[in-house]
Length: 190
Image (cartoon, rainbow, N blue to C red; front, side, top):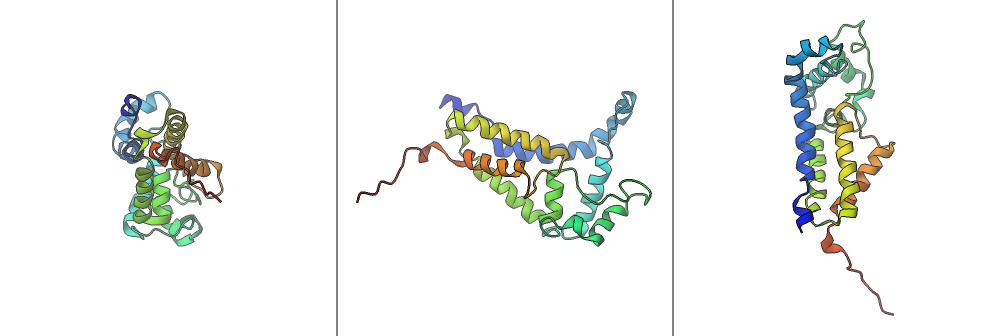
C-alpha cells in the first residue's frame, strides 16, 4: 500500500540510532566541548561519555561475548571495581555502584554481544513486516519503539520490573503481527 511504503524501517532505524548515538557521543561530542562549555553545558553528558568509554574498555577485556549474567554486572563487586579503576576514588564515578546510563551498553554488560545480537535480531524480526500492518496498529507500536530508543540512549531502559520493558514487548508483538494473519480464525464445528 502507499501508506506502507512511506514507513520507517523501524528495526534498522532502532539499531542505527542506538549504535550511531554512542559512536557520535564518543567521537563528535568531545570535539564541540568548548561550544558546550560556553553555554554552561557539559559535553560529556554529565560524565556519561567517560563512563561509556570505561565500560567499552572493561567489556572488550572481560566476558565480551557472554556478559556477566542478566542483571548481575552491578552486583559483582569485582566487575564494578573494573569500572572504578578509571576514576579517582573520591569522585562520583569512582564510587558509583549502578547503571551504564545507556541501554545497549547495559545489555552488553549483562548478556554480552551474543545477547545484544539476539536483542537486535528480535527487533529486526518483529519489525520486518511493518509495511503490511494497519495504521492504527503501526502508529502506537512505532511511536513506543522510537520513544524507547530515545529513552535508552542515556538510561539503562530494560528492566524486568519496569512497565516500559513490558510496553516494549507488547509493542514488538503488535508490530510483528502483519496483515496476512488478519481475519484467519479456526472455527471448530461440533
